[in-house]
Image (cartoon, rainbow, N blue to C red; front, side, top):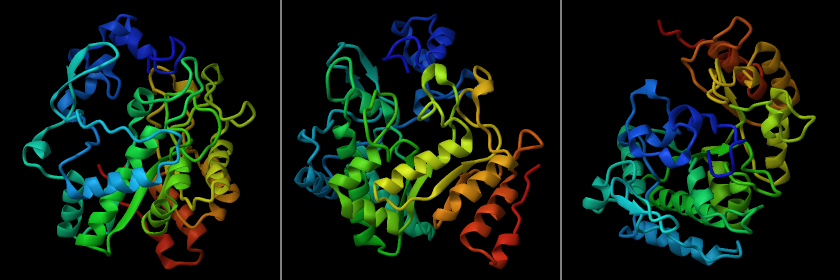
Length: 350
């Protein structure tokens, strides 16, 4: 948020909540309320990190798998001193803090990735979705010259180890479970990476560990979060200057997955997007209107076998926006034409 200068899209949070100085970021203000605003009444205990449970046999097997396939130019480096809920000192600055989350898994010597598979089995769930968005990890471990551009091999390794640990436990505990992942819009895109997101993460994971990404894509799916996009070119938010509308950006990002040879699903979001901030920067939001939905279905969705959206109870904020039922029916009619299911409706919560 603040590591690349005052012109970054979310630097306003440093101004608003940290008096314009990132040195004021602290647990007491949730580090300039990076994730949620003060009105959410969250604490750092509300958040979590993806752990690296070095004591777990399946995590050790996943690490061995990742290390054997590492072709990113750098050997994997693991953060075994990163334990949720425990103190950590930044080796670069000497600043100490308590990490978000609970350390109960470490106290009990439990692998959370094994436990989530057991939970899914007990609940009769159809599968597990890995929503990996640790931009901080990519920025902390970026590789390259001080002024960029950089690469993010260490985050590719960590993400792949998480998928592998879960896949190993699925095979051992409940082989019928599906494995899916929520993929960043830019995570299938090649080219220079300037920090702040997970550009190229899935692309590189597929290059290093094709069997792992193929397993995920062929069971639960690689579901691309082609939403929460912005047309604010003062922050270079459009992928190219002439690709700024919602439907054009969705098509652009989905084509990067095509070019990478990664089967993927189109992502949608109903009502007010979470990004850019609806109060701070509402004019650059790209909500899913009925017109935009029609163009995405016509120009993009027809090339793909599936779509997904967030969320089924999030009703339109304005009359021209697509409702969950309208969205579900449109996607269903595209991927399952003529199927009676496509006339179904979703309940509206009061």
